[in-house]
Image (cartoon, rainbow, N blue to C red; front, side, top):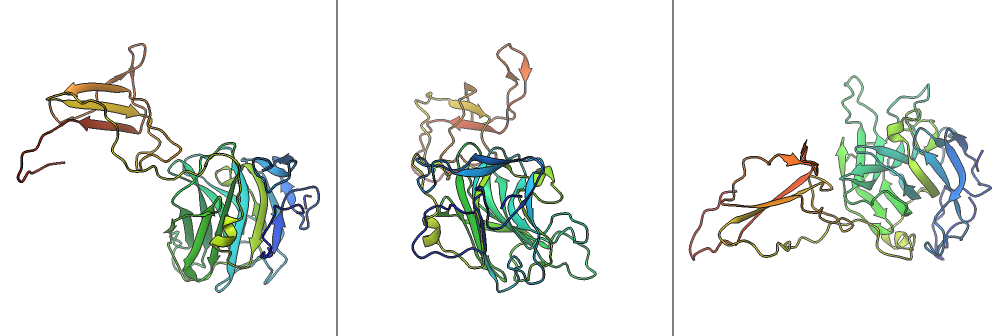
Length: 354
């Protein structure tokens, strides 16, 4: 059993969570551990994170189904949320790895895979979701399927931040708040900064979430499914029955060091150097972070793989790639292709085909 006591410094006027786990020696609300759980792992610590003690501890999960569970106390428990109820979920996370397409659980109620409960009974959940190669913050709940209507997935309602952070050694503070029944009320934060996001799956809804007596799980769901299991360390998880605002969230994160949250890099004209006269410079960069977006602030353009001069702005296919031994090899996607030239245009109207 693992039951929070030492907490970061908080503002003088502070909301009270219905539960908070700091994963110290004794917790006010006991949890039962399952699988590969490592207690007394290093948490966010001063001086890097000055609001924490120098010996602060957290829990580390193996990402293979390891989790904590807490039984619900019954009908209309403090953990049950329905329309009109407000919720804020927050946690400190250190994500060791996050594979493409994964949605891993920090904490959620329902969808445990336990017998006697529906498989899609998610009352609420705070998750970390892989999005464009980063770890985004995600909120999930399910509504009651319409009787007699086939389950099409529209009962799921997921909101995810547009931006995220790179998995690795750093600790991040994440949070979401929502008032059930008001899809416009959703808010998300990473390291104390509000983040834009969007609903998908069943989309925004005013319908009420599923409510039952299924358990609260930390670190996994669906019976311990690997694809939903958190791999890394967790600390200071809290649940509130109210909406916390930007002013409060700004106080949650203090770190000594460089900026570590990824934001879109400025859209500026690249430095192409001196271009050849009367011809087109073709250049290829392989191994771009993602195919459907430009670089983030924590990313750099991969080293140029190949360049040559061509006569036109026309390329019908990529050339064959060869490795250092002269052996045929595949391009490492995504590949950035650039065609550049200095083209003087005479005054007047011109037609350009792209």
